[in-house]
Amino acid sequence: MHQRVKAFIEKHQLLPSKGTLLVAVSGGVDSMVLLDLMQQIGVDVAVAHCNFLLRGEESDGDEQLVKEYCQLKNIGFHLARINTRQYAEEHKIGIQEAARELRYEWFRKLVTEYGYSAVATAHHATDQAETMLLQMLRGTGIRGLQGMLPENHLIIRPLLEITRKEIVDYARQYKIVFREDSSNTSDKYSRNLLRKEVLPVLEKINPAFEQHFVQTSMVVQQLNGWLESEVEKWAKKHLLSTSRSVKIPLKPLLKHKASQVLLFELLQPFGFSSATITQVYKALQEQSGKLFFSHTHRLIKDREELIISRFAASDKSGVFFITTKNDELTTPEFTITINHIPKPDNLFVNPGTALLDSDLVKFPLVVRQWQPGDKFKPLGMKGWKKVSDFLTDLKLSIADKERVWVMESDGEIIWIAGWRIDNRYKITKKTKRVIQMNWTPVE
Image 1 (tube, rainbow, N blue to C red):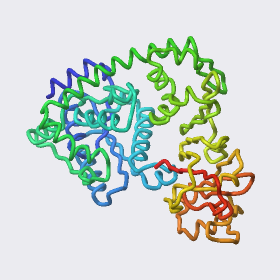
Image 2: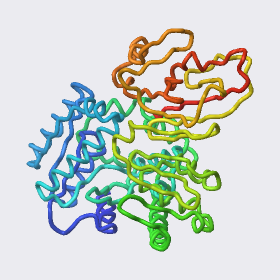
Image 3: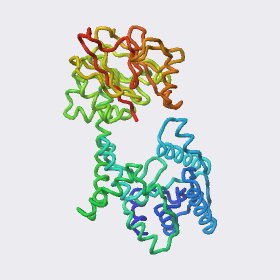
Image 4: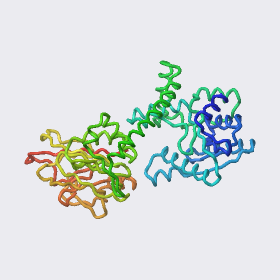
């Protein structure tokens, strides 16, 4: 294995001839084997260990193991103890995403401060197969199908051609000390479920499936390099960029033989998801005025072009407009669809659906986050109620309250989106036409 890893490093030019490599070590079998391999092939190393304070004594045990190993081997040791849960709550992101952001930000600081040549992580061939499968399941383009790169900025992955089984066998053969992470056996995370339920089936079909994924990723990486070059040529010829916006002309876009692929590559750098880009592509032949959002940008479908502009954080919690009675609004926080339907016999619907008397609803509609002082007449009540009191009665957490949006018609709240319509806009015996609104929050 030593020669294979060394050959992989040389093939992809992952390390300079001189300098110290910072190895990210969790204490698990993958990273402990990586650390040993780097030492065995003569790489000067230092270690970075993150204690994310997520698993109590287990996390502390990991920290102690790595620290003692580095002391025994006289290896430079860096430790970060980070309140990951607090960071996740403050930034409204998942625990895994928070840990990843915190980890890599710390790595970059260490490289800058101490002058390390790169940061090595223990991602291996099995991780590569899992990553590519997850990307396919979530929906992705060519860039997503390439999987993890051997080198990405300062991060290198020397074990990408080594399977997890080979790593475990190496640890057993050379008596490498390591600790098991109990979270790796939990079904809470999609990757773990894939690892436990899907990969064993693939191994039965083809025991060499991991290597085939690695080979495929290398081919796709080359394809992606060529594609990026072609997209760059097209963009230089057709895109109109200013300090405030980027405009994509529709006529040459639609004439392109691979228009959907081209659109995906043009929009993905602005943070638009695969699902949103698919919606944009479907809207190319439709009426102008539709809005789409990533976490950082807004896209307007105009008559002859797509207009992309950055929006401030305040825009996310600002105001959105729905201009027609058959429309869809997609934002980083939620999607709302509006349709006309026949008057239903059964008025009982799930909380994410609102049925309203069409003749009482005036467009354009305004969608915004609720504010102190807002009030409405909840369905089933004749009197007014403050939105804040209504949400308190629901026993929502502060974080959940911050994610509540209201819809206005002609200055009046008609719907606490996903919770309750206003009693004044309900369907009655006199109702002739019905508007159905569906609210889908982004999890």
